[in-house]
Image 1 (cartoon, one colour):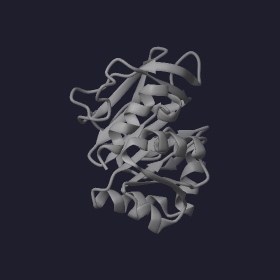
Image 2 (image 1 turned 60 degrees about the vertical axis):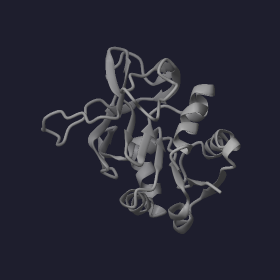
Image 3 (image 1 turned 30 degrees about the horizontal axis):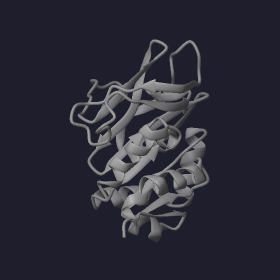
Image 4 (image 1 turned 180 degrees about the vertical axis):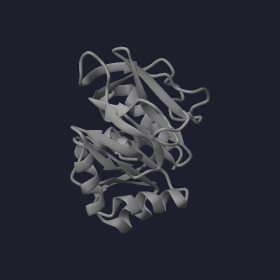
Amino acid sequence: MTTVAVLDYGSGNLRSAVRAVERAGESRGVEVVLTADAATAMSADGLLVPGVGAFEACMQGLRAVDGERIIERRLIAGRPVLGICVGMQILFAEGIEHGVRSTGCGEWPGTVEHLQAPIVPHMGWNTVQSPAQSRMFEGLEDERFYFVHSYGVRDWKLEPEGTAFVPPGVTWTSYGGDRFVSAVEHGPLWATQFHPEKSGDAGRRLLENWIATL
């Protein structure tokens, strides 16, 4: 039986995430568990990391359950991880909110910062610019997804003053004249800035695509 652990570190729409994965995995008999236990999170076939709220608060919660180490160890072993919303943001090098600079998990370069758009938060349905031959967006090339956020990664750099470098598997979204990373598909590590659990049939299909990799 395929198992998915939803990491409970005190942040995110946990029950909504559990129900969404249960629905997406119903035909495959996927078992979903909400847990803060490191052994359970490590042994599951897939780990989903949700997140809602401030970057620093989410990092504090993640560290409290040894979440950084869990994610790192899973990725070293090639075991799938999916981050959602702030659960995606904390995978980057750092976040800046209200003048506070916080260190993230550092799985990817980049800084989470305030969106430069006339109206924030960015709330509602929007399209994405997914790369060709994406497994994450297979069958979803023309779909829209649901966003609720005021911060995002607006540039992808190896270093704060380095040369912009955009690897394959990065999806972008435009909003209010600004642009930000809306998804990343990088080996066993996938993440979305939008909420698949709030994105109807499109979100369900994306979760089905992820489950198919477990």
